[in-house]
Picture 1 (cartoon, rainbow, N blue to C red):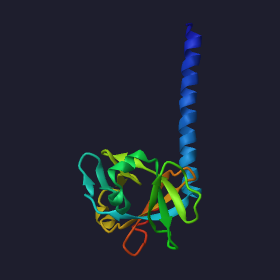
Picture 2: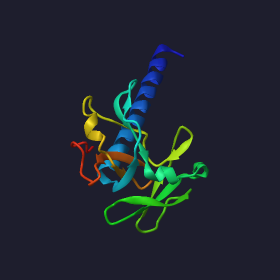
Picture 3: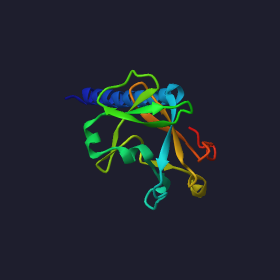
Length: 164
């Protein structure tokens, strides 16, 4: 392979990687702007990590009712009430078309199924604010991808302007 062909191959690979990254960012931004806004109850867990800095480990009340056989499913179907608060409807390998039900991709955390991310990072020294978190607000796209956008207290009030 000649030097110019080698350089061209490297440039093509770099452009491909940048295009894939730009598309992923665009998809996340689109979900944050247009995804369905839902609220999911949190389950309390330890709020700090020495290795990663200030963050709150997240768990969800819905996760506690998911059994080990949930690992055989791709989606958790969630009921949505008038306040956009969710509860588990059922598990499925398909997206849903039912009214007031949304499909959320299941994730795996330490071999257990979960409906959301396992952590929320915050600015150093602001941990006391987030100890009050009782709910997470998510934007969910048409394919079930859920992105955490904010944390709420027990009165469903935004904590410390943490909205993304």
